[in-house]
Length: 119
Image (cartoon, rainbow, N blue to C red; front, top):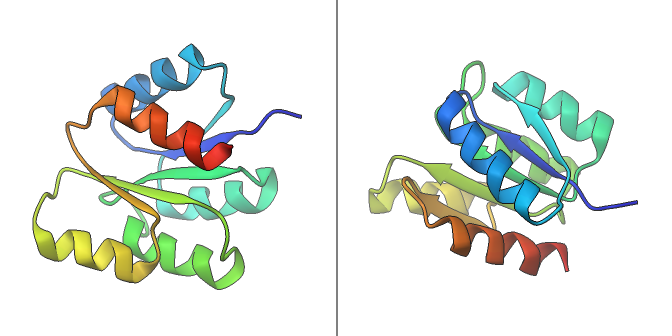
């Protein structure tokens, strides 16, 4: 079975960028558009990595990360946000993310990091 990535993003253009990146590498992608559905899809689909926007409806990405860490401590989580301020970066790592990307991010770097974590 191939390794999959859950992408949690509520903006269609950003979601399409991740589709292109993952498709180019042959990595299956699961999509969620808000915090509650992301938690449900993590439980149902057991992805191997999560790429998570901070500003999503329902439950923000920081809280999603904290909740996932309580049950899935080894699941790699990448936070992606338009917030480039140092305090957001610090909050993301305090919540338990593995990587932090500011939008717009470098697609090649994103794919390199995804491949690194997926092994």
